[in-house]
Length: 188
Length: 188
DNA sequence: CATTTCGCTCAACGAGTGTTGACTCAACGA
DNA sequence: TCGTTGAGTCAACACTCGTTGAGCGAAATG
Image 1 (tube, chains in turn blue, orange, yellow, cyan):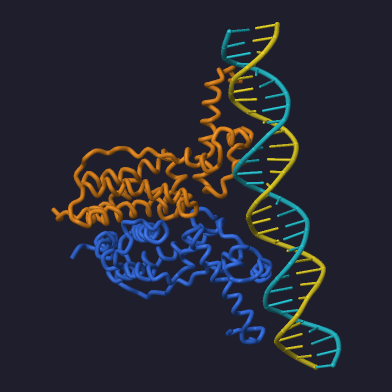
Image 2 (image 1 turned 135 degrees about the horizontal axis):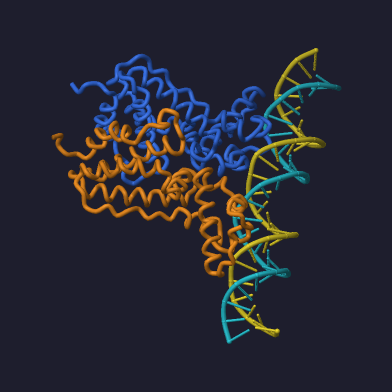
C-alpha cells in the first residue's frame, strides 16, 4: 500500500491532522460531552493515549478543533453586508467549516463552547454594527446575526425537513427583506 | 416548622413535584448530559434512588420534565399570527416555560431532545403554515419559526450582552417587518 | 393493637470516562 | 555502529455516572 516511510516530522504532522479532523467531525456530530477521547482516537486510527500526549486534555483538543478564523470582510455598505450574510448560507451548506458546526453543536451545553460562541458572534455583531446607521445599530446587528444563527441551527444541526434540499438562493430570497429591514436604512 | 404531617398521597405528590421542578431547573441550566441524577436529587432534597424509583430512568425523567403543552392559538390571519409569535418573546422572558428552556438547551446534543424539538417546532410550523398563503407556505413558516428560535437562543440561552435588558416591545418592533415579509402577503 | 403498605434512605455494583506512566521500536544524529 | 530521541501502544488508575436491591420506619388498614 501507500505506507511510505515518512520522515518523523511529516508523520507527526499527519497524525496530528487526522486526530484534529476526527475530533472536529465527532464534536460536530454529537457535541462535546458525547464525543469521547476513545471515539476520536478510534476514528483517527490511533491510541487514546496519543491524543492526550499531543493535546494535553480533552478541553484543549476541543479548543484547537474549533479555533475559527472568521474572514475579514472589509468595509461594505449595509446592502452588501446583507448579501454577505446571506452568502454564508452557501458556505455553511457546503460543509466547509466543520469547526463552526462543532462549536455551534456544543454552545448550549458546554460552557467553554458558549464562551467561544459569544466571542465569535460578538465579533460578527461588531462588524455588522460598524456599517449600520442609527444608535441601536448594535441591537439590530445582533438580531441579524441571530436570524442567521436560527436558520443555520434549524438547517444544519436540527436538520428540519422543511429546509431539506431548499436551494440557497431561495433561502436568500425569503430572508433578504427581513434582514434589509434590520439595516435601518430608509426603504428606497 | 411547617412540617405538617401530610397524608401519604399528598406527600408523594409534593416530593414528585419537587423532583420535577429541580429536574427542569437543572436540565434548563446545564443540559441533559451535565445534569446528574445526584444533582437533581440534592436540589430536591431527596435521595438519588428515589428519583429512579419514581421515574424509572434519567431518560423518562427528562421526557416528563420537558413534556410541553403548546397552546392552541385558534384561527388567526397572518398579521395576528405575527403578533402572536412576537408575544411569545414576553412569555419566554417571564421564565414561564422552564420546560421549554430545558428542551432547547439539550436539543443540539441530546438525540431525544432533538426529536422532541423537531416535533414541537413542526407543530408550530404547521399552525403557521395553515394561515399563510402561497405554495411555499411551509418553508416561510419554518423560517419564521427559526427566526424566533434564533432570537430566543441568543437571548435566553447564550445570554448575549446585546439583548440583555432590551424590552420586549423593542424586539417586537424590530422583528415585525421581517416576520411580516415572510407572511407572503402583499404589502398594504 | 397487629399487620400491611409504601415513602424513603443506604450502600453498593458495573460500566464508561479522562488521564497517566511505563514500555516498544523505528528513525535520527554523531 | 551505537546511543538518543520521539512516535505510538498497553494496561491501569481514579473518578463519576446511572442504576439496583435490601432495609427502615411511619402511615394506612383491619
